[in-house]
Image (tube, rainbow over all chains, first blue to last red; front, top):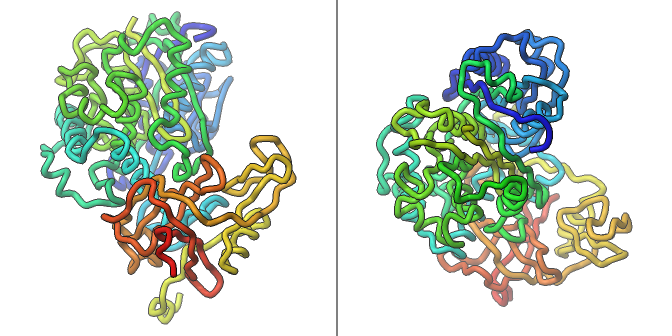
Length: 375
Length: 147
């Protein structure tokens, strides 16, 4: 990465849960204070803030980060990776020294909201809503079906994916879904938009997450072992209508990883673990294939044969993923990758001697990825 | 909110149609499928946009298309996410690959066929469904199935 070397020094969550009744400000405040405590930093140390959800200027004043030298309000983008990448580059370029990146997301859109009317249609929605195309689970149904058609994956592979993720979640006290899950449970869950089933979807919740980026020099004096940003990449290959993607199997992750690997000497073979977005199961499978850890079309069998388990070729989504940790909208993957590389902070799900981790967000029209190292 | 309103059929989701998209819906009302096309380089553009992404031209107009295509992907929605669809589930959504141009896709419904009978790549043709007195949508049926 060009400019100053950047490290992650603090991570934190709010008290996440189903319909907590807490505002965006509550979740932002809890997450930011938790990240500061994790890092051993004070409010006065923070000179930059970016968030998707809420407003960075509002949050900064509330939290006593003043004056800010850098701020960015991130809108629709590939989940938390967008504020995280912008924060890292703000530090690298010297626009700020210590930046908090946040994702604050309340449980939405709820079905109840849609039933009450007020579907909030933007221009493009007029080509979706009258056809009954109203929720992300439906484009995910289209992507999943095309993936099943082109690949060797079966519904049983998708079941094994959900079971593997739940197995990790059972080892994560912060996961919201931890009860044992069997392949039969997965197959018994209803279709939302066939072939997409309920347990292919992430678990909606209210949450705030914060990650603090600073320079290598400052990181050396702080509480935690620094985790370094080796390379980042953002990609956009289409507009936001997933339903009209000309290729629903080889989507933006392919381009994103081409860019990422062109910016580092490391390769996919160096990865000790991967934290790959799972808003819907098919997304993680697309990332695994884009990474080349298995042949094209083989991510399903790769998962079923234990490839993503703790003892597999590439331990993946070791916190249990957003299907179980809850919809932290990508921030959980940054936080879990950081904890894995600090060593010993991932408890029973710790990957031994983890030195290199990739975390990646989103799929389809837009993605982002960040490569982290432990030294 | 009147109680009487709850007894009548729910309206389709609210539509926001502007000058850019109005020709599409006006044509559908007359049972024609028309898409935006660049008048300089010939590129079909869907969804409608103010500029041609291939040549940069602002000379765009709606033109009739054949209404023929094939099924690129499909999904059977089992849950109603809006009251209008409560008695329509399950229904089929599909990404249709239109015949006019490689990579020209349209999101629509498949009608006249059950989910187990749908095949990837199967040829389909446009037909029209009136959702309300003011709104007609282009939907697709298996080719040759429309008398």
